[in-house]
Amino acid sequence: MSEARRFIKKLESIVGREYVIHHPDDLLVYEYDGSVDKAMPRAVVLPASTEEVSRVLVVADEARVPVVGRGSGTGLSGGAIALEDGLQVALTRMKRILEIDERNRLAVVEPGVINLHLDEAARKRGLRYAPDPSSQKACSLGGNVAENAGGPHCLAYGVTSNHVLGMEVVLEDGSVTWLGGKIRNPVGYDLRGAFVGSEGMFGLATKIIVRLLPAPPTVKTYLAVFEDVGGACLAVSSVIGQGMVPAAMEIMDALSIEAVQRVTDVGLPSGAGAVLLVELEGEDEEVEDQGLQVEAILTESGASEVRWAESAQERERLWSARKNALGALGALAPNYYLVDGVVPRTRLTESLERVSEISAQYDIPIANVFHAGDGNLHPCILFDERKPGDVERVMEVGGRILEVCVELGGALSGEHGIGLEKKAYMPLVFTNGDMDVMARVRGAFAPQGRFNPGKVFPGGPEYTHSMQRGAVLAAGPGAHV
Ligand SMILES: Cc1cc2nc3c(=O)[nH]c(=O)nc-3n(C[C@H](O)[C@H](O)[C@H](O)COP(=O)(O)OP(=O)(O)OC[C@H]3O[C@@H](n4cnc5c(N)ncnc54)[C@H](O)[C@@H]3O)c2cc1C
Image 1 (cartoon, helix red, strand yellow):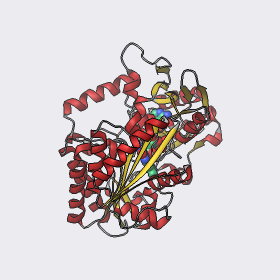
Image 2 (cartoon, protein in one colour):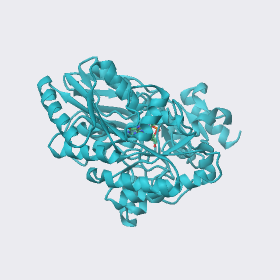
Image 3 (tube, rainbow, N blue to C red):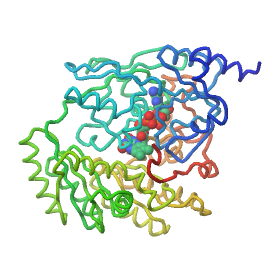
């Protein structure tokens, strides 16, 4: 029996035959995540428990096979793609909410739990899980931890790292350990903090303890219409500059509005340059008071119209417009490439002007839909992968936009991570010394470097345009998710 066959047999003896995927046809769906790259894993294994994960990692360690964790595969930076003939460990069967502790306001979950499912379960008890990536219907808590995911409501409540208290982790050699726990302020180094956002390169999280917050009694969602996206950005800075931190502040520009409206009429104003969604949460009176102030600021900032959702259904409609905006881009172009950068909030207007200049210079349309309150930018470059040269041009445009973010004092990623996609740009922000320190921290968790090799650090197996060409995002309803 070949070495490769023996490896598969060992995995099958741990999880059962049906939970090891190794036929090339079956592996096709595991080549991708939501990003532009693809690579065929050697095999995918779907364990059902920490014990199975641990035994799988012992087998991989013995065979010196690289290991890549996989949640729902919605990542946008290539994190879940297995390079170097790696083994994907898909955690989708580990999807139980193990505990919701109302008195201590926390939950213990398995990594495959879908973000929205946790929030829904918490809300039945008057609580909520605050970080809400726009992909929350599909993405997993394990993936959220690895990418330190953000979302519209992270403006007021903080990103994933602010809500994870601890996690059970399986390391390269199969050993199982806890980082953090139920106690809120543990002593010692914050290894939990180091693990969150480590992009699957430190270990596999097999249980996660998260903080839950009380669900707000009152929620009010405003829609403000602006002539241009710059005006909407200035309004964001004005609201926050006046000492208010709304639960969410999200902008969609003219192209995104057009795309959403073409797919379903959700009542977004046609012809508007941009719309800004502002959500306020809290006690009745507090929301009413803040609402009056916000309305006044939005109007002073040049909004031509300010309205609010009168019912839960209307509010849902506004949010579905925002959260489905990426999929709706398919109405405008066969493909889009989403750039994820971040700038200081006060430089949003300038950065969007620069994005618009780049769009004109390359004669390529760019739609913008983004968590404005956090200064996150999500320019979506629209194109047609069938046109010769388009993919290369799009990649160049993406690089130019990231350079602008860095030049304006921002960073390479607002929330999607570095992965494969942006590793070549790391030297724009980090010195070799910085990266060496990061590599040494990684080495403390994973001395063999077996978790997710080829990601984050420049060098190693590079992705090529020919790889990208095969996997450029197909836009359209349900794209990515
Ligand atoms: C339409 C759309 C909208 C999006 N909106 C947002 C948004 O608003 N905010 C945001 O932050 N992101 C957003 N994303 C990106 C993506 O959904 C997030 O990065 C999400 O956290 C990925 O979760 P996943 O389960 O799909 O992880 P995957 O894509 O499967 O994996 C992502 C990374 O996590 C690692 N990983 C997965 N599970 C584990 C585990 N148990 N232990 C260790 N490592 C693990 C993988 O190895 C990989 O490196 C969006 C994506 C799409 C397609």
